[in-house]
Every structure is written in C-alpha cells, then in structure tokens.
Image (cartoon, rainbow, N blue to C red; front, top):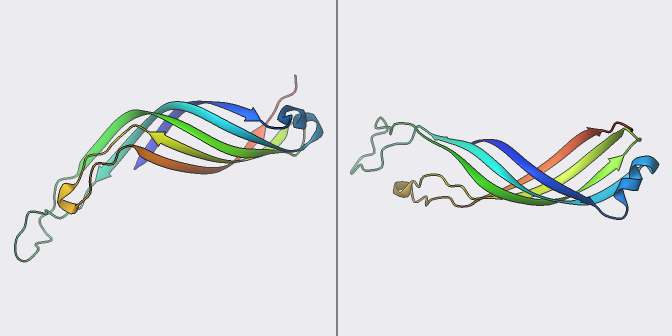
Length: 131
C-alpha cells in the first residue's frame, strides 16, 4: 500500500518552547491536525478460492487495485532539540485515523478494513532563519 498525504497540523510547545530557540535545549510539544490521505492498495497473485478437491495454483485471480482519497485526523507528541538558533532535531510520534477502506477478500476470511490506523515515528532536521 502506498500513501500520499496532505495535512495541516497545529503544534503547541510545552514550557516555553519558543524560548528554547534562543537558549538551546529540548522543547516537548503536542501536535494535532487533519487532512487528506490518498492511497493505492494493489492485490495480485491470489489463487482462485472457489476450487474443490486438489488446489490448482495456476488459477490466479486478476490483479485488483483500490485507489482512493479519504479524510483523516492525527495527534502526536514530540520533542524538538535546538542545537543552535538555526538548527533543531525533531523526534515525533504521530497517530492517524483515516476514514478510508479497501475491498474485502471474504473468500480468505478478510473483512473490509475500515477505518485505517497508522502510527508514524519520525526524525526530522529543521532549519530556522532569523528575522
């Protein structure tokens, strides 16, 4: 499954995080947002399930693709460590709930997946430009 995401997020620094930009050190924060999540799920190579007797592995179903765009929300926590006035390292964990779905594969016992849940863990390098 591949994803392309466009979100808008609000970031709130705890304990005077903005002041850390000048003095250095770590600034914990909370982030919340929402946006659009475009995804593509491709299924191929599945053996036809309606067989009786010996399983014929040459009976392959045609490939199928689910391409959709869905609305989602996210929330997370992180810490931004300011190494200097212009450079910071950002560690973040963000949880996403996306109101999208993929087609069920009931012959294999897989029900429709709705909604999606994702956890992103990230390390970001940030550059700040003084006024």
